[in-house]
Length: 374
Ligand code: UD1
Ligand code: UDP
Image (cartoon, rainbow, N blue to C red; front, side, top):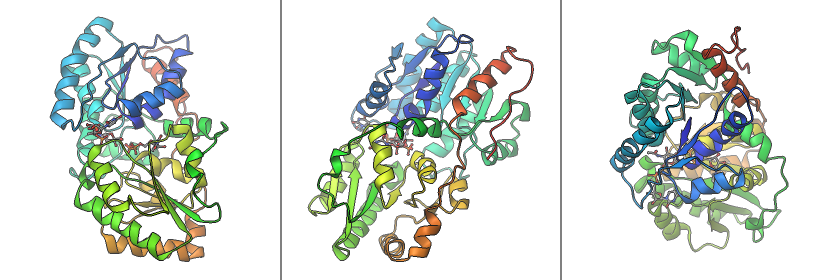
């Protein structure tokens, strides 16, 4: 049984769901919590995934307690009814943690996809760092995307035999979407000779003052540089949209648009000059496409992209964000260094490895499948 609830989980679980459905070794049950509604449905629709159960929990301005309590209450019955042999969760959302807790209460093994990412700072990102740590305490099998994430799990004394290095399923999806033709209507008013900076921002710890600081820096840069355009597909969280519209809503070279489906968004990433984001998933996708990323956070659980020199941590203070943007716009050598394409996060075969690892766990194959190597 796969259980997921938000846009990024869906994007990274869909290749696994499709692979499970097409493999005779498994009977696949797909459950969505609906922690996100429209942004989840957008992903399900383009990959034509129809969940067997939809807990439909989302409401406006939901709190962490709301999400956790509703999932615990509603998932228990589904687990009792379906009695899966294993529950697969992804990443670090509150869906991930609450699902793991519910599976544990039902004594069902848990497989954690994208296990072992760490900042070691419990409030950054909040609540994701503790969601993934608590999920890893509860898990039975660990699908670590990289050798670094496996090393983090070993530091926490997770048994080595239960850890498999698989690559990140985000790259499975990206390799599929980027091949499909896509017409980017959202660029109709963006001059092709201009430098297009793609922005996303949504993290709970950045809501409010930090977001205002970053948006102010974006506005100042676009006011100073007349060959720069900003495209910002806004998260549906009203707290994000309100600040974005207040600060960025009135400049002709700032384009506030609705969230794109993932195929469109990957093509937009590919068209950008560089990316500014506090997203986790985008930090994994950008190195594959050779796009520099300024990470709007003080910490990252994705050090592989920093080592590959594609990612740079810039925090959220206005002056620093503005200075770094101007440097990346003007310094060609830095831009070239940050634009080297690399694949530290995967090779497009993570889902297949995870299936083989699960079959091995259930004694369907005798030899342990090979790990992903960078
Ligand atoms: C959640 C995850 C975060 C992940 C992010 C991906 C938690 C605690 N947070 O944060 O780890 O990075 O998803 O985007 O699990 N909304 C809609 N429609 C949607 C989606 C959201 O209207 O399709 C609005 C609702 O008002 C909702 C609010 O956004 O209450 C916040 O959604 P929520 O899932 O609580 O938090 P995110 O910031 O999206
Ligand atoms: N994404 C998308 N449409 C958008 C913005 C992002 O499909 O308008 C995709 C993006 O390619 C990545 C994922 O959503 O795969 C990241 O989701 P988000 O930033 O919401 O969450 P995070 O990765 O921070 O948990």
